[in-house]
Length: 151
Image 1 (cartoon, rainbow, N blue to C red):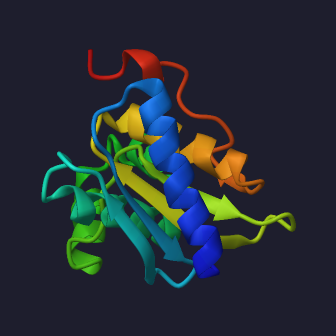
Image 2: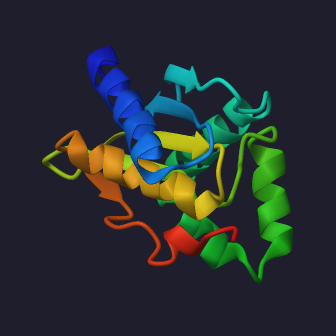
């Protein structure tokens, strides 16, 4: 993922967060190999948020599906969740907010992870930022209830 693309994704995500009135966000953009390209943390976003955002994106890349899908599929499989956390040296965060970034050929070019508000709201910011950057997100749409998440 080129630096310019990663910067655009991060900036769009922060803009979406402001427009939606979300709490201060931390945005991590990783390339397809899981290497951090951009990390932006807004004033007031907690110090663990960077690690959480990276873990959401890293988990999505590692499993090839969004972190929401991971959460949903592993809900009844706590032993497998624990195994994945151990295999990833703790870099695996299976909650919404980790979204794959696909190019126009549907190839994964990276992932964006966001932390700072309720997880469904983080995912909304990620999906919307990817769409606004003329790329494709997986999942294609955020959870329907993102506005009510955490309330």
